[in-house]
Image (tube, rainbow, N blue to C red; front, top):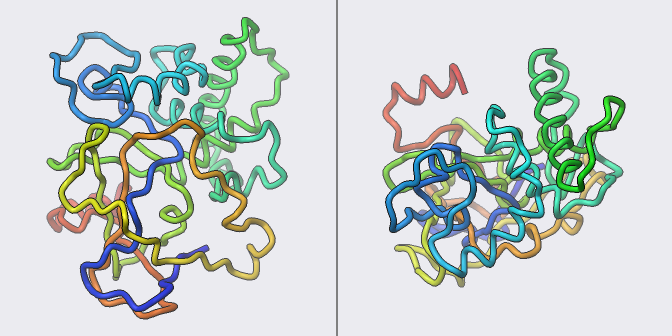
Length: 286
């Protein structure tokens, strides 16, 4: 899959409107200092040893807390590794059917990379461990326990989807606050060593307009699906986020070169503003 320009695009033009995530979660280290809904810093001092969601406003709480409580994330063990991945996956599960005809390949229009990721024994074990923790949490919320023979394929596939598609949400200083998964309007944009676009995050409280944010921007790219993937998924198959999300870290894509109509839009593998030495680290260990 790839995204191509619907029209000629000049340098510095917005390619997408601000896009809300399908699912997202703060990293553990920011749960006590940032709003779990919009990722904005909280106005009160950090609460030590706090693991649950906190909110900057009633609007963020009413939008996010029902999803957080319904996802069963509060039943995850506190010692779970990569817990932001698990929380994001659990929240995403709320918008998905209990079964999916293309579970290993696409869910909500997004590639899971299930077969590729689970082909590595070490990584497959991590995915399995995370999926079991997710399934157990969902059972516990219903007052049940997970049996050894219970199927956790859905949890495995959605966790693979998160690992494949999630991006690190950064604030203005470059700190990674958490992760977010966006719909194919962003997630189908491929990476390139010679990108013609970049992306940035909009982290702000409800009803606040960030510098450069234009909610009236149009989506100026369209999906292009190769023959091998044709019929497996179409853009109409994915949901526009988990129902109920009104806030969250938004993302916008902007051109850094002139892009001709029909040309593929690509972003960098790494943050273009990083020093060259950091680019090398990203390529070697990313």
